[in-house]
Length: 69
Image (cartoon, rainbow, N blue to C red):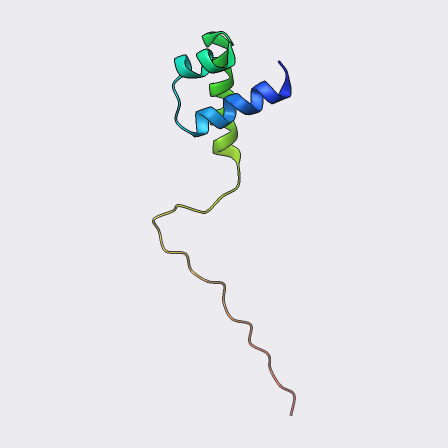
């Protein structure tokens, strides 16, 4: 598959378009769209982003420097 078509499919998936809509726009088979969607979901899960944990994070302990007097 040509890279620009793959990028177009990913962009349309991110925009919330259905597989049928994407198939009509790109003239690709819906099975190809489904395969790319599965890849897209995995890539989104592995991409770095903002942490969405509901637990409060504890900051690291402060460094204490002893002064030699």
